[in-house]
Image 1: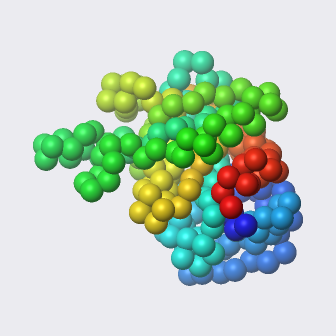
Image 2: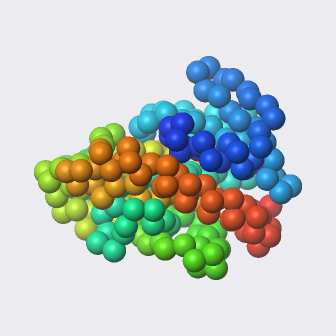
Image 3: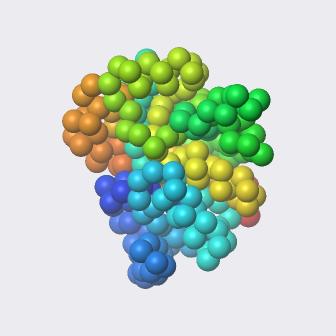
Length: 236
């Protein structure tokens, strides 16, 4: 099977590059795709760059050139849930944008016209991912992940996000855009993120301090899910 994997920055893909023992790099425009193997799976790993547009381009490149059976988005996120700590995993079952507002035209907050209110993760894949996280004793939280083109820190923005999306567990800058592309092209998607900061005044400092542990946690769970025969069979 072909598996597409997306991380935003070098730190988020560094561990997974070693996991897949890549032997080849394909260059498309300014993007590098690292091609390797994990079990019997062909892995196509791309660093998208930061933000929604960059993530969308990377997703489209994977779908167009490599036709993945599934895309996995790995990396870091800022925690919004009270129980989350640095290094904890988030496994979202829904995604949306926190910086989209077309409510004056009858849409829900966070909704793009002609798309659903929330992008839903496939329930079967989501459940297998949760089972794997439990089996290997990862600490994780599930729920709504929100995406926008700002690094969330400080009281004003965080309070606004929490007010508009009270059920959100975490915030980051790429995943909903990847979900939108996957929705458009009927490509299954799972998100495996780990907490690097708590979206507070110290968020930028904590992100720099904790990005490695967050990336390590995310990459390790991604490896384990791709080694899960039940998961692989479900996406054949």
